Length: 135
Image (cartoon, rainbow, N blue to C red; front, side, top):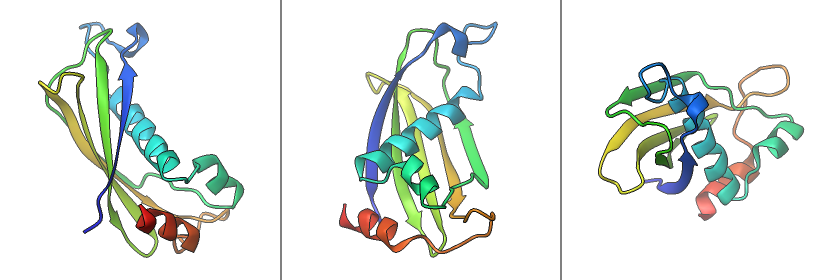
């Protein structure tokens, strides 16, 4: 079983909240992106370098289950895991919780095929597979 995990922290800024004083729901998807970008970076895969090599990882599916609201100035923790690696895609799972781990704020996942410059789905480059399996 594949288990590659990382952790990122984000302080909620005022601009990320709505009229009710809680984090606007779409910002959790932004936090998912922060989590996966930082996890890839931690294992030596820089997303900008993937793009320069001709690969992109579009989101083809996202799911987010909102459990408890985050508010302005909260420090949230984004736990990210590469849970599945297939021939041409990766799945990232996320758990977002408060800094004291008293509340899970949201859970979800994203699916990402590897595509080339023409947008055609391609195999995951071997160097990416190797980096993931080395961890």
